[in-house]
Amino acid sequence: MTCAIFDDEPLALELLADYCAQIPGLELKAQFDDALAGLAFLQENQIDIVFLDIHMPRLTGVQLAQLLPQPGPRIIFTTAYDQYAVRSYELNAADYLLKPIAFERFVLAVQKVRQQINSSIPVPGVGQAAPVVSPEVPATAPDAMFVKNEHRLQRVAFDDILYIEGMKEYLMIYTTAGKVLTLQSFRRTEEVLPPERFARIHKSYLVALSRIEHVERGKVQVAGRLLPIGDTYRESFAALIRAYQQL
Image (cartoon, rainbow, N blue to C red; front, side):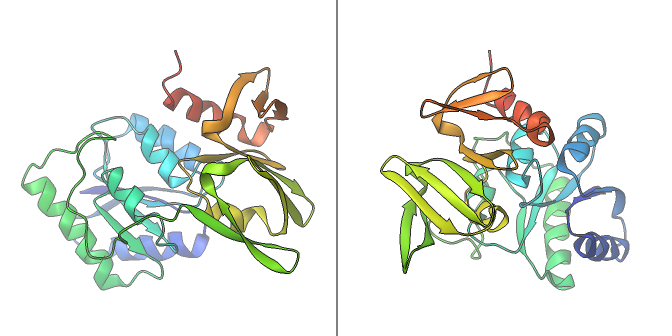
């Protein structure tokens, strides 16, 4: 079997590459710290397994999985956060490995894919019936986050978020109910937000995809306000729009 590794952490890439080298019959073809470069590789090369980190810059692992051609490679998500387990199985992930990943658990995931391939189990497309969920998957996915606002923790529902603006070390969260100012980093916020529902479009802006009204000339309109699309995020955002069945 052939495989590729996607992770923006050098130590994680090194660890997984070492794990791959220890498994007979598993050949590591490529490794990427940039999801867009890896997506181009997967569109041109047939790979059996992709070890895919969820939190990567420009394009998240969940977003990349939605853009893969079908039938595609078996996906094994690798992440330090368990809140996306349900979503990973909706995307037909073969397995979901929580960091730090033990070698024994890695071997089990590879064996699961090997058995699927040997049994000629077809890989459904995104949105089709997913495989049986393992005991590691939580029963429900979170629908909100708590942020520090003045001297309290305030609940912010994902459905209510319009967009988020970075203001140095603070974030201003614009919601249907008003604005919430919090002392938080974009990095930490992106780790909590469902990556299939939100996209970073600029170093200072993150938007809810369902709240986008239109896209024009390098800008996105959300709640009547035009927000710029940064050069760093332009290509990944364009790929997301195409994935949303652009006509």
